[in-house]
Length: 100
Image (cartoon, rainbow, N blue to C red):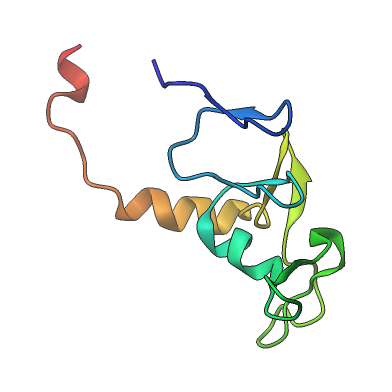
């Protein structure tokens, strides 16, 4: 069972080891990359940007939201069925999986 992590400055809790929580705005993110994207270099100590206003700047997803709020934290876009199938095909097969 995963350990529950809590923030000392708000009521947020999470169990994902790769999650990131901002002690400035008290928003939680599914990974460090999304946390970094919400931080601005401007201001004496930087500043938090509203994740709902951030968009992808380049590529085929330009202009789309960078992240979405789901299940208590900001997350990247959900994968399409085709993307999920492609990732599933890349995962190694566990030879002991059928033995259970």
